[in-house]
Amino acid sequence: MFTWRPDIGTIEETFSDQADAEEWLTLNFTELSAEGVSEVTLLEDGEVVYGPMGLDPL
Image (cartoon, rainbow, N blue to C red; front, side, top):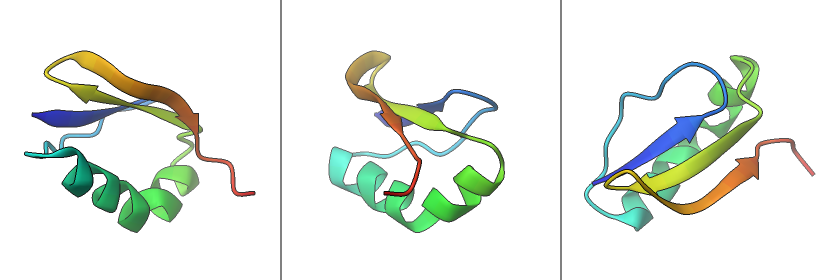
């Protein structure tokens, strides 16, 4: 299972594959940023896939 670990708070969503997790982040980027999340790390079964990745807009 894939999950996102934010630098603050928690994300309860879990995903069966990396593509679904990345799509969810794309759709929820603005809301996470508004809640004060500045970076996230993608995990697969608790192991880091990549990150931390900043959420600051370019």
